[in-house]
Amino acid sequence: MIEITENLKKEIKRSVEVAIKEDVGEKDLTCSLIEDIDVAAKIITREDMILSGQAWANEVYKQIDPKIHTQWHFNDGDFVRKDTVISEIYGGRNAILTGERCVLNFLQILSSTATQTKNFVEKIKNFGCEILDTRKTLPGLRLAQKYAVRCGGGVNHRFGLYDSVLIKENHLAGGMNIPELILSAKRLYPDTEVIVEVESIDELKIVLSTGANRALLDNFSIKELRMAYELKLKSQNKNILLEASGNITKKNIKRIAETGIDFVSVGALTKNIEAIDLTLLIFPIKKTSMSNPIHS
Image (cartoon, rainbow, N blue to C red; front, side, top):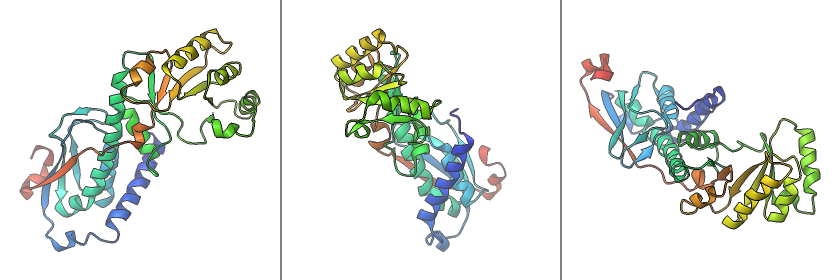
């Protein structure tokens, strides 16, 4: 099971509240026209996927109608084949329909992120290299998508501007001195990771002479990545981690991982996603079966 922290629980509640307000507003007008009966519903995937987003789906129905019961057939992080029932839902038809779109939206987006991540992770599973996400997330869903990345076997990079120092090209515009900036970061934030983006071997040599924790190798060629790894082994900062970024694809990631670097950061995990094709189908059931819906 993928851990859901207390902070993430609060975020799930918040994001679901926003989603319901956005979709339902004051009232589900269509459901107000039909009789509310007890039903069973099934969520089915129409394509292979890695499941992610159960807690968000559960929270949707918790906020709409706590009496709704959901039985999951898989855990977050599990591989699910196409045309498979992911979950069964029991309760009032109107509440199930009112929450349908919010539930599917969370599941299809987060499962897509998890599936995309897993596809990249599988490409380099035989190397000592890990897949990192980025801050290129859907607005308002950063913690959710970063959770989904973990479901797919990836590793989270920084969550925001507040939890690590990442000195990039634009921070250095105007002739900022890299070693001095790193020293300032280490002095002011001694318990915080300091990462420096480099765009050439010469810049890397400068960073390797400092106490930086990680060098982000931006758009390095395969040859340059190999050089970077060899330079690290010969430098005074042998513990520095190397991270490749920029134009990472499923076609080139294996060759990148073979160079010996520690991480590959991939913006596509969270920004170049195609929603998983999910559907929710409703089936009328006898009211007497609701006393034990799991076995109905």
